[in-house]
Length: 158
Image 1: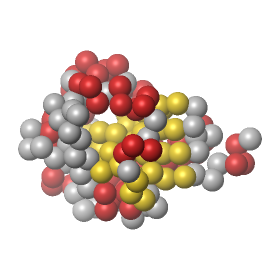
Image 2: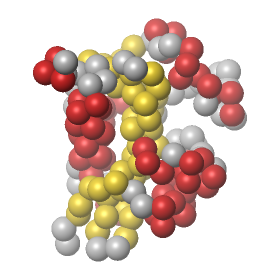
Image 3: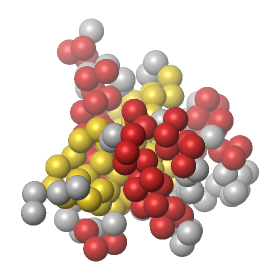
Image 4: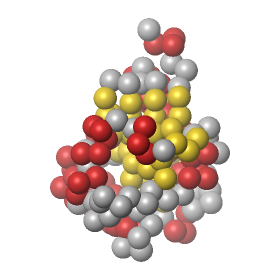
């Protein structure tokens, strides 16, 4: 079966919600409310096999020079097929097209991002703007996610 990565549709929101929260229930990622997914549906990409959503991830613009890759989740039975890497690459491509020079993420699985050129940084270097979502996190203020960052060469956008 061919897997395609494409922008999420509003009708995908319940499937994205279920996928994310399956992992969140195990403490492997942060939960997302269905209302948040609807509100930010334009940020999301999905990996689709036929009509099934088997993966998701989002590129959320934080500021003029920074965007976050968030809510990356791949169904258990489809992992280790580079679907997550494809979603990350799609998000990086969009950031590059938008002229955003820095992409970051907060994750429990840094190796996936490091394979694509991200490097670990101390969370304190990230601007305060990104912490607005953190106030709603059950782990706040004791965040145990790992921060990673990628600098893009999008000088051709100027």
